[in-house]
Image 1 (cartoon, rainbow, N blue to C red):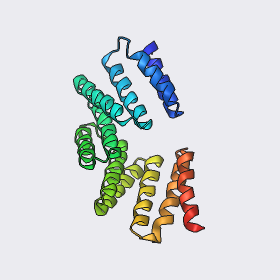
Image 2: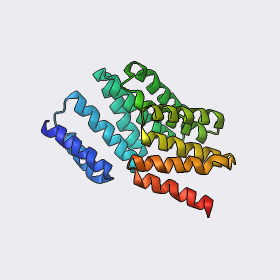
Image 3: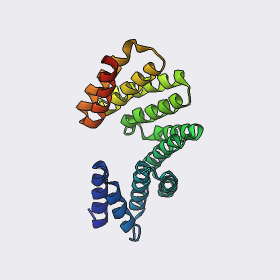
Image 4: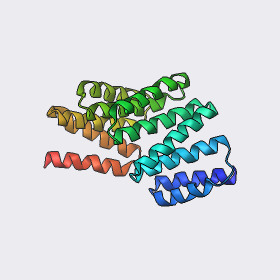
Length: 214
């Protein structure tokens, strides 16, 4: 592994630790280096995601567009789907639900040729599409997408994906005053977040259960 690749991997580890400012410092130092195509993509994508987490949405959007352009220049479908997914998320956060949906559907279209290697990631695509539908008030489609997300995650034994889908279905049913299965959804979510070792997320869902059962 080259020194630059090691720095990129180190930045990803710091990202997981939520040390976003340190990640940006590393990535900005790399922007002056001579990078190969794959490295250019990884730097721009990670930079965009970090800035999204720092609520720097305009800068994030610019980085993610550049990441997509680099992925298309690389003719790398796997990179393209990753960039499209993040562009969908940033558009969701900006409240542009039609464009968010467009990006998620384009991700789905391009990833079709990557199946089965991309199969496990489909649950996250469907989860995000469901979230966009819920935010835009299209609850029937939201439920359909969340159920798709659960199906794909369960097939792949992706505990984190299962947990997200279960939490989303719990939130949707709670919002619609369909309370019969809400706690069951949330309990399954907590169980699977713990299996995925996503303990902060498990704790957040557990707090919802506690509020409902007090």
